[in-house]
Image 1 (cartoon, rainbow, N blue to C red):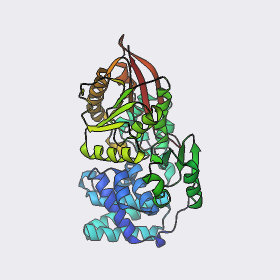
Image 2: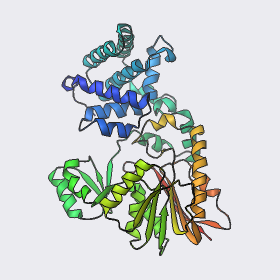
Image 3: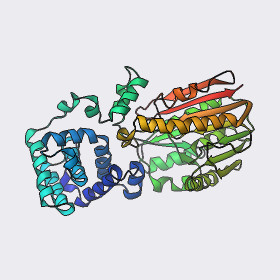
Image 4: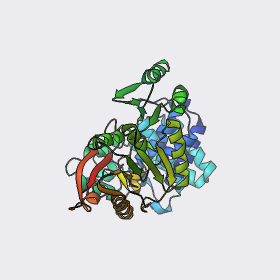
Length: 413
């Protein structure tokens, strides 16, 4: 896809992009949160930042092809500037001269003339060599799909012979999904009048972009909630439950699943918990906005029993986020076996507590936004015996519309 010429791009945009990339890649900020706070309707910055993160290993491979220094000798700021320039040159088709000159000037400003010369040399060599993407396509999967070797290994083990679409999907642009609760016609008319494209899926809309101005009033009145469509597959599991009077959502914030359950079981008493006070505050705000009168919100560790019994316990456990790589591409380099091992400990403890929170005949929903079997089926299978059985489960793999999502409904016999 042809991009706008870089002559029309304000140099300051590259400085903003650099600052965001430094915070995400070096200081471990979340990409979606960092961009949301700093960028307002600046598609160039969004594309450059997400693009560099998505292709980091590919860009690093190209950089090292021309570098005379070992990787650990290259300053972090120099690496990011090189990644930015290479991404623009190879994937955004920006004008070579403008990109290289502006990146070199930024290097002089942020580092020194020596670093600027080093960066200039790499970019000029890449330019003269006419690096083509066909070369990358024939590289190892870690380079071609820019993914950490351990995460790649886990995906391969989880989806033997069927993992290529998952790797390719991580490069797609994440869409905005909204769950429509009320006033569907009003929301649709607002989207149309503001020329915002959308696709309808049941009671969800898949938006080409999110326009705060067009939807502000509807959002404030709780007539919709921002929520990935894949999450709504939990309702397939809820159809197996005829009636419940009491529900606990152990990892509730920011409240999407609480809302779906509350809209399904309108007469049930719901206790929504989270361990983080800041997230609980956000949860309370959402509960009030949505007008849910049957939900009690409190701070609680999902691993600890609150002393009460419920008909249904929901545990959307902390996970790697391997199903949301489109939204958080930096996870491609962070997810490894050590991380999964630590998460598994929490997942087991929370599921064990959820089982203890329901009476015989009660139900438990275990869910994650991971697509890895060692966070999903492998964890659930450890608790299946004479006293706990699987009633139903659902797995949504990332595709053009959805993020990845897993949920399993258990029943305590």
